[in-house]
Image (cartoon, one colour):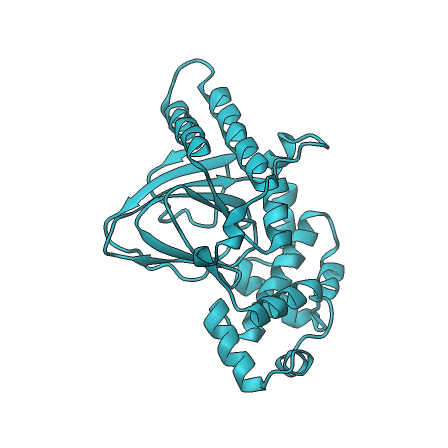
Length: 289
């Protein structure tokens, strides 16, 4: 489960969770992307801003970013200083299996999504907790001793419990204007799209609804999200369709509910994004892959 590099593995998680401790002297070029799993990013050092669903976060050491599955994001890295971080990828099935009805380990990601704010700024005491637990988790993942895998599993849960407790407390980071930047109008549009994926969505409709010129909407949307309006809507619809397929929704029904009026359009877009047909996608789910 322990790996020193995300290269070649980005986007794929076959284990319960994975931990990466990375330090780059050169600034890697990363485009906007998403994952089918949740991830925690513990920022340790460097000059980095992070864009998550159109909101830009200016990171400080031991900030924690919560990036839920299917959220579009990317880091913007200044090469003046080495970029160091600990990244933990979390499998959805693992999160569910380690949770109880009143103690869902995924709560922190749900709260961040609902608030539209994905930054957790830790205090000095909690930083020490995170530092020590992450070090113990790294040691357990390297260890061949009896019970090391069980120990690692429990330590990963412990980190998530800390994050959940902190995110559920009052968080003053959102009140610190220097910690993030967002475009209120674009944030409103992004939220509207997310809530109306199954309905008609177009540049003209959005421009009219939000009292913007068509040109300004297209230009500003691409600037904030890295996607054209059409690309973003199609991507979000596909990700939603993928979630419905995992839950057992029939393919044609998932396509329709996700807002695809033409099934042939859905098939082409699905193949392009997931590099397999919906039938193959469902087959992999049934086989537990």
